[in-house]
Image 1: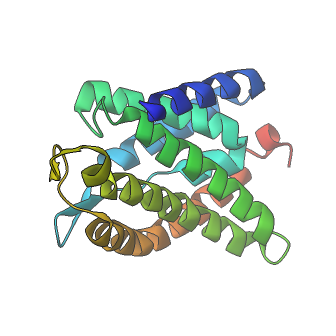
Image 2: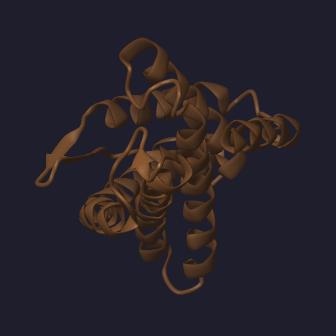
Length: 200
């Protein structure tokens, strides 16, 4: 499966790129635990879609996208193995969408908008960390009838892109606003509370 190969390569790259500061490890673990709890709380949405906050942008902005990718990948693995959240078979897609796309879209959104307004940039980073992964997930779900079917009969998932794109992305646009606000408050609080750790 291509997703398994891509996920494995990303994890290998992350392993080589990460240089952990021992002073930050307890805080990384703590923020990752908060992300773990945020993801476990699912929010039902009309039409059968469920959503959850992520905390991905908080980790990415505080510690960098590769650390965020690694820690969120671990969070997703624990959730899949212990709670069945996301599922083991969909784990590679989840780490690509939520951990990788979420972390890097947040990080670079912040970099782009920070020259205009730091607070706005943090909010946009949180928004991006939910919106862009939802686009990836909606696309992967929507192409299932094309790539996994027999005699034009879908094997696993019957809905195409015309259904998955609006039903997944639209509600996540609104959830992303909440994520942006949580990210803004979380990043500002942690940077103030742990100034010595971030050398501010």
